[in-house]
Length: 152
Image (cartoon, rainbow, N blue to C red; front, side):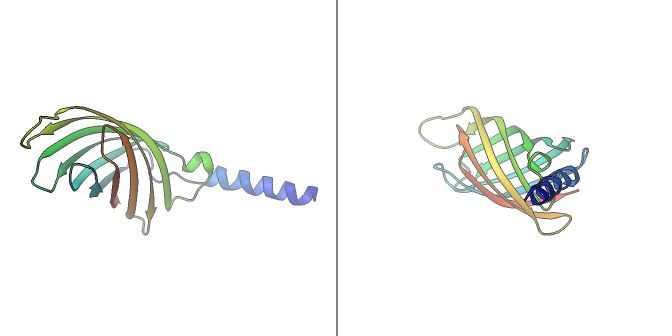
């Protein structure tokens, strides 16, 4: 039993030590897709830069495809948990915060203003370059995003 526990411990340390981050420092990632929110059907496009193997900073532009009622330029920061929890590089689990400004073009009440939030998401890379992304957000931002990511 002691040998079995030692084997499990060594395997865990080995897999954590040799797991890789989804992005290497200096690498970029383009994200794009659709979302779901109470204000219509948003689309988004954004870019992330790896400033550390576990940290990305980026920007995003979201807009409503149902009549182009609003646009949200946003800055975001994410921590990627791959190294910490030892998951393989074809998967990416992250969480972070964002700050932006909602610019309302629609009729009626003007809801323009500061947009603060957080996000939790994951990616599955089916190749070295392309991945599928699912993200859930809270705060004054919108709810769910589904899209693709491209590393370069």
